[in-house]
Length: 218
Image (cartoon, rainbow, N blue to C red; front, side):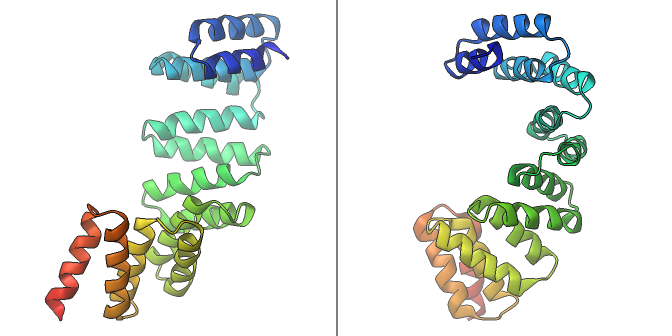
């Protein structure tokens, strides 16, 4: 087991100082290996030392511009601090450099959603779902993006899949209710969906509000 792996195990055990020691040794032995810089950044992030963590993530990218994991780590750091434009750029670079995984596409799509660029988000969320059909959250966000771009039938289809995968997904029921109330003009089904969302999550304010609007319209 190399020092990176040993350090990761120590990090998972909460032994931050010991992990930092091993990552420091790895950096000294292999200064052009981005993994140790990434892991060092993870430890600093766990310790809430964001400024120094960012320096190590950037260093990882600097020592190997083609390291997809370095770009992904930097993107995750930016995303966690709501720097979505920079996050999108980093996730895009991680994909370009070979990280052809569902998570990369999902995070890139999610970054665009938070930037209110739904059209840009759609193909990446679609690809995330294609790569991992069991990723319920990716499919849910894909469904929301479809609804926002007025692709209502596809949105409804994907929301039903979300519910089949996670019968306790209150937000999926709420958004189905919105589709039935608005686009489909089916008040009965909308009521059922809002009721189901409230059954799962009694304090779901949006579902409660949607139900009250329906009742006023009756």
